[in-house]
Image 1: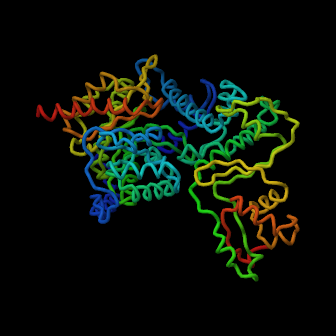
Image 2 (image 1 turned 90 degrees about the vertical axis):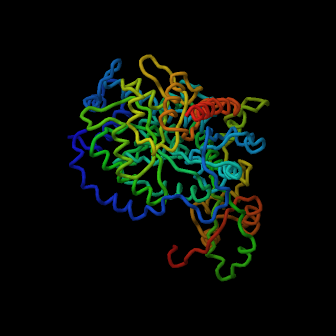
Image 3 (image 1 turned 30 degrees about the horizontal axis):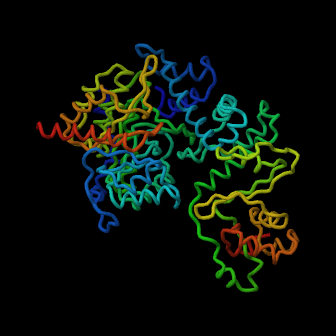
Amino acid sequence: MTSLRDMQRMIRDAVFETGANGPALAAISEHIRAGDDLAPAEHLLIYRRAILGTLVRALGAIHPVCKRLVGDDFFDAMSRVYARQTPSESPDLGDYGASFGDFIAAFEPAAELVYLADVARLEWRWHRAFHAPDEEAVDIAALAGVAEKDRDRIAFRLPVSAGLLESDYPVQRIWQVNQDDWTGDQSVDLDAGGARLIVWRQDHEMRIDEPDNAAWLLLEAIEAGQTLGEIGNRAIVQDLDTVLPRCVQQGWIGGFELADGRNRR
Amino acid sequence: MHGHQTTLNFTLPSKVNTLKKENRNNATVMSRFPIHPVTGAGIGLRSRHYREIIDTRPAVPWFEALSENYFGAGGLPIYHLERVREHYPVTLHGVGMSLGSADPLNFDYLARLRKLAERIEPAHVSDHLAWISIDGRHVHDLLPLPYTEEALIHFAGRVCRVQDYLGRRLLIENPSSYMCFENVDMAEWEFLRELVDRADCDLLFDVNNVYVSGRNHGFDPVEYLHALPAGRVREIHLAGYEEQDNYLFDTHGYRVHPPVWALYEETIRHLGPVPTLIEWDNDIPELEILVDEANKAQKVLTDVEAAA
């Protein structure tokens, strides 16, 4: 007798298989009761359509600009390929699609749209920032209270809502002119240069900011988990003493902790 | 029903269940919100109606919130839910427990649900007779179980463990389904009846789902209704299905259809005035339409009670 686990695996395999003649669909059909009007496999296919439809709609809701850029049919077909090969690992549908940008970057039929992957990455960061938990600004008084001898051990972190994005293309401009409420000039100059963005939320306001070069290098180092001492020693950022307060003031620093020196390189 | 007598290797969950039974009456010692029972016809709480509900306080007896929408630590959804909860009883309804899955229980999910329940103080918490994941892969749809003795033992044991973890009784809802299995030991209603016995849980009877499944699988919804342990049905759901070529699909995107209203009347005559919810998940209309549907359900509740 087939165990519950094996039945569930067979159903899953049949749901994510392509076509109506695959081995997984044939295997599970042996266990499905035929209806008056539907053959066993047709019952399973109702679930396949519903499940892929849900995943494709979820990706579309998170990536409206990508969808607009390639059209509904192309987007849905591309999303179906992604949904089949990319398991959803959380019961929360809002967690689905983190790797969609990477997928698009390698998706041959979309290769012509060189900027599409980065637009998807921007929309994903927007989505995550929108749903991120509320957070207080970094505690400046606590920061000022760190003893001089411990200063090098300070490990800042970005706001929990924040994601950094570096692109060779003007993705922010592409994103902006494709918003529903955009009424200005629709043209985008792809040679206008790349973008370095921090996508985050300040209280209930969504933000896409463009840090200058020094601030970007600092934010990148912070995202990589480097302490203030490491950032200073490696001379990653010039003029750290003015760049850091500027980043704090912008709200790009979410908090800090004192790293344990023994466990760090 | 086959194999029923051979299933008494079920001692562990029922023992756990007995130990903690005193925690299950949902009595809250310190409550942040007014405690009132859920009665009459409520509606599902949807984000597009937050503002209107909070500002105008419509005459709706209770709201049902989709648990997973409020798992975030802060943000606007939970803020709005708390404002609604200040004025109305609220129930929590989820799709994420995956109680039927052969995977281990997801305690990260359950911890978030427990925290939400502590914060909102719901009248009750419900999920489905279904599974949504296997080997950690989630399908975001309610898949049916083969109604076997193996599945019953598995499902009842998990309901017991979740009830103990949450410190409250669960309501289990019958799913709408498009697939039945060969070699099963019992019908869905027999499975539910046994489940209530073994896990000491309650039921959420979805009249639309039973109509949809009955049409799809050729069983009589009235027989299903009469087979349920009447005293254990604590909530009823109503929604609108969609007619496909050769099956009914449960879209929750329409007004309740006439045959479902007829079955609902039969249900209330049989079960009494069980609190009833209008569910609407796709193409969500103006609040007014939902209130109008809830008023129709309320009329059935009132008329049947008056006639009794």
